[in-house]
Image 1 (cartoon, one colour):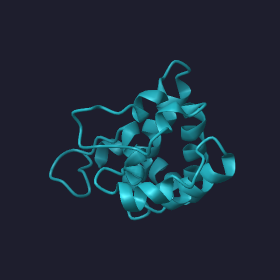
Image 2: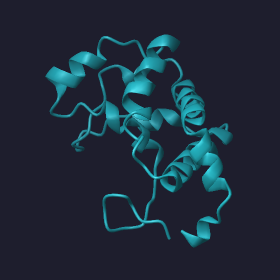
Image 3: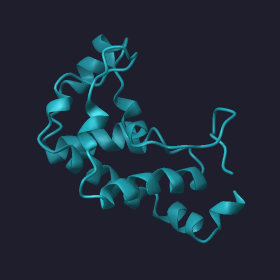
Length: 138
């Protein structure tokens, strides 16, 4: 069983983990201000955001962790009924917050499709390497 890279527990990636780099809780005046300069409905801005806050953030994961993480996204994208908007919803009791207005983007699925596309490009060799192995042996 593949263990979490930083915690002593099994690795269980979630769709919401792709948004961790955009977390502005207690950083509203720094990261929050920076992210407010972008329009998540603009393809060019999304690409820049994804490279800066997703691709860059997860570059140090092992190829096996990337493979499982990427697989979670692939499964969700294969489900036409999957509600990607849930990942952007703010829970009042949570110590988590995404930039204001992100929960109102035109199409949250497109945001995750772009994440998938850019990660597939960046991680292609590592994903291929992991696909040659049996995850049951990790």
